[in-house]
Length: 196
Image (cartoon, rainbow, N blue to C red; front, side, top):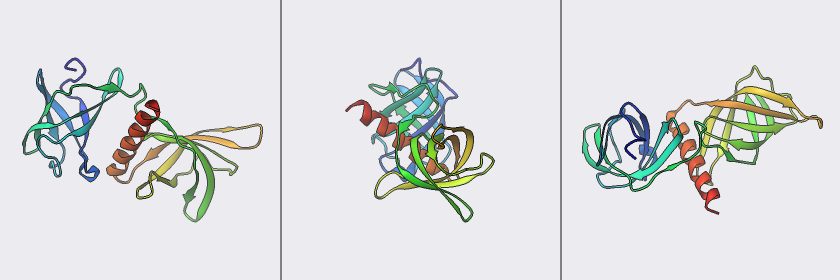
């Protein structure tokens, strides 16, 4: 583990109560764990309570569970995790996500069928002529109780022989919490699918 975690790496930390998600930078690494300097006060984070951690390495996104051994203001000493896993080489975990939804642009609505999503963006199919120069809003339902609304910015459009368009594009967020929610959702779904 020590060879994967380095000073200066950026970390997303998600406690059991997701609304207290936080992020920070690793400032020191030892055999017992690492020191994490958070950007925000560690509300909802308790000593010895497990949290999820996500960080980018040259081998892909690293995911593990661990807990703070000590909390001193925004400085946390995180215990070295017993195990970890690489999610994938992409920056964000991409999952299959097939739903009939709507893109909106001012008063215009475009029916779409999503194909896959990640925290970075999505791919969908549509019969509508969605302008590649536009910027759209989309609400992604994640469960009966939770959804995420973000901006969709098209990057690529391909027209199929059947007249449908396949779009790929990226997400932009008005709230960082929405991005963290989508990272966690896609990661958990990816692990569930692999364990089926």
